[in-house]
Image 1 (cartoon, one colour):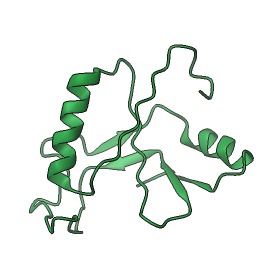
Image 2 (cartoon, one colour):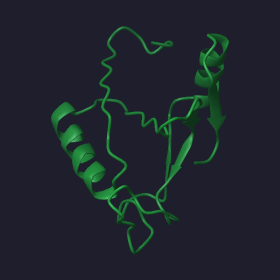
Image 3 (tube, rainbow, N blue to C red):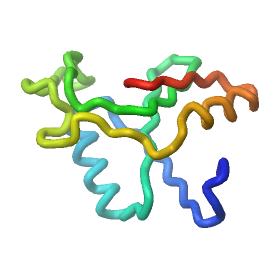
Image 4 (cartoon, rainbow, N blue to C red):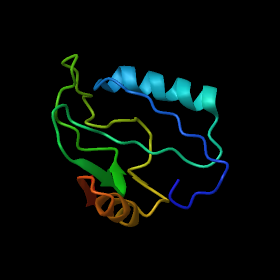
Length: 111
């Protein structure tokens, strides 16, 4: 899988666009799967024809309500969490690889 070696397990999960439900599911997945290295979050909007690979994810500044009509009062996704999460994967290189394979992929430096 793009130079990651032989011992790579890929687990695909579809998560709801819900702050609270997603936090619960992610917590359970980390506990159950106990990933040794890293996890990649890939967000896709329904009906979108492009995949955006984000190098950095932010924890603050959320203003939009989720599918349940909820938005955290603090505008923070994870209370007490890091302000930013920087992927150890070079998403620019990954997006280039997928574009060369004919996929509609865009690299984003900042979520």
